[in-house]
Amino acid sequence: MSGKNISPTQVSFKHSSPNDLTSFNMAFNCPVLFNQPHCSISNKTEVLNLRTAKADVSINSYLLQHVDEKTKVVKIPGSRLGRDVEVLIKDPLPTGIPSIHHIADLTAMSNRTLTRRLSEAGVTYRDLIKKNQETIAKDMLHNTSQSIGEIAFLTGFSEQSAFKRAF
Image: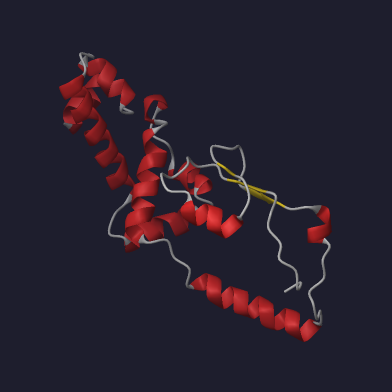
């Protein structure tokens, strides 16, 4: 739109780094940081001050409409979103089950949008929590000598009795 080839100077995400960074590197062409306090895209001031090559009100209106139409159809595949949310749930489990609000914030979605997208993938937030707890608990029961109480705590249960009822 500006007639110049520009890239941000840095991109930051709140969530953990995925295994494959290829798409991030291709999309942003700059350093991409994960586990940051805020999601952000940084640019040089001169880039932010660039005018479009042929700035005018009608083109601006057209472009805004076009962007709006295109972003409505952008979707993260449900299976990938589910896996991403599972990873975001796993890390804080020892301190308690993370709220959907917290996870939605990390994925830069509203609670409602996250719930809807998970539903479209055929899963609920609670399903992902239970799956995480079960996977971690089974692994710990088989591969560690930790007590049931310790495992209950590390999988997000406040009491050993709740852990026993769940399993």
